Length: 331
Image (cartoon, rainbow, N blue to C red):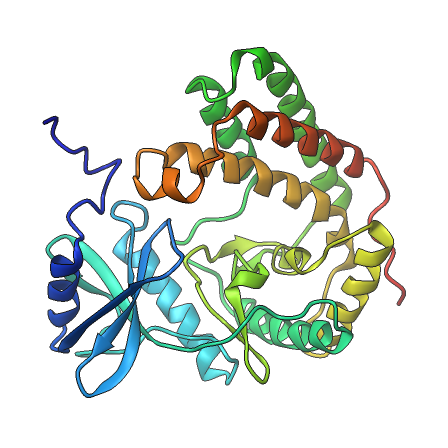
């Protein structure tokens, strides 16, 4: 049997017995109940604890973040929680939030239930806007020191380079993708130029509806992708539909948001550019992680010709959207 490449398959040793040892290294006692939750970049489990409520354990992907970067995530989470904003921060156990056992770094969180927010409701959109405004007020108070920044290079140029140089694009689509991606990156750069000087703040970074749990109101989870960037990065993923529908939705979000934090409307020029970067980055992320056995199981369609055909079609639509006027939001 060939040796396992731990860089490509970093969790191969994390079987249930090992996971229990990892958790119990903190002094807690597991009752044996383990439930894997939907997470692929990291491994996340609901863990039963003797004589206590279950906890959520997040085992960080080895090699992705430094200890300093993870601790900066934890500090940001605690600042938000200290501001009485409903975000689930890591628990402090034995005086620390980041733990390590047998090469696995992990954090523990209180378990909270909930469902995705009903974004078709105006009151929900305004409510989310208020909390995001409060999160960004905290985020703007001081910069990250070690966490990365959302850039065209890291979310655009490097993903395109990965997909082309590692031969992920089917041969009959490679020329089309190469030409299209060059045009897309030019349009993304033009969108940022139209936006002008943008203040970059600490962001949630991955604020899609799946990272917002709703039960009598929202609470936010998963700051694993927190980074510096324009505020609108945390807002545009709440929008859907045609331009006029997204404009109406954004008005509601901003009605709540601006009660707590200023929003620079020139950032509206960035929405479709950021959507494009996310599409490119997501495809390259799947490619980079494909040797992790969890990924082919969770994303069986990735790599099929139909996937690339659909991606190219979607990216062509994005090229058109980036040449349209930004969302028109009434004052």
